[in-house]
Image (cartoon, rainbow, N blue to C red; front, side, top):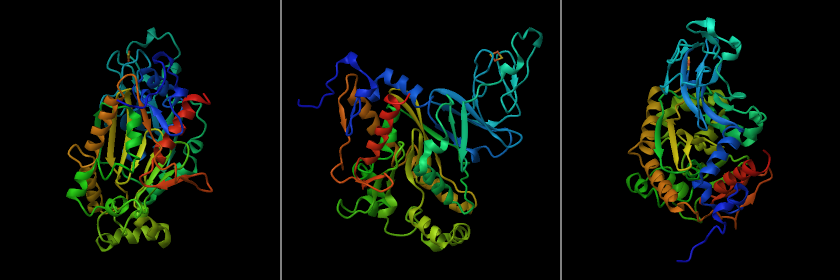
Length: 426
Ligand code: FES
């Protein structure tokens, strides 16, 4: 059987050799050593999305997450500060919180009874006479840097990643602002909880498939058969030389599918005519002005990846959690908006269930493809081709690379940044 091979000896694996401008060595997905290095270079030394402040509206509200493989707590303090703390007792390392979401007045450890405040400071312990180190040194660890933009909370464990603003860049900031501005009060309200789907595939396959505009007509064919008038019909399915939807690489690993350019009507993303949500439209105009409101009503929310783990998936938001080289959890929650009628968010919730839920039209298909890719790359590799559209890629004045919705510009943009982080500057 003729096949492309990676041409590398099994013992010569080095991350700098795995990626070219248009190809990825399959071992980038399967090698345990590559995964371990990613945990350091990307998930420890870089900025990682933790959660949204609207998930913890009241003092003591918390969610538990991971930074790479390290468990953390995002918790609202009594002064309304959002703290990100290691979910690891400073004594001998037991996790403090087991639930994914809840409210706590303090953070007790089950093992020897040390108790921490909502800011991570040690508040008390049984039999304190034996404490042989300074009490101030017994606080919970924190990431070296924590920062927030429009309620999106990010952390960098090493404290060496530079500013969040630099990590996001103008493109990332614009995407987060865009998602938030869709609310008539300018804020998300992520209160529906998260559904996690654990899949036997590498985390990067999710970053790729979530931003792949080429597979919708084939892998998700069942969606077109059941919902023939969805917003994707005009955006993606109208024919290669007819569709107007595009792909965009915004740099820094942040990549996008611009389905909205191919929509055939306003509010296609919500699936309702304007008169059904007239109150929402008027409130949006009131806050952002008529011109921007009309843009938002056409575009709907972005479809984009904020490198490395935040997927702005139109009416969903997802976190890509790396578990092992061949194991990932894809968490998602509906993109509920603050300041809208309950019926509006109910509609978003129903859309989310249909697309991303266990019996939904999209995520189970994507999981099947990702698991089959993981199997196919096996142990010794093979090469993935990402060259589609290099013949028609355009670089805009701001450096963004754009192309046809089916082109693999997002994949190339993701891997370009991955290669930079894994080889160049750390
Ligand atoms: Fe937590 Fe000892 S391990 S108090």
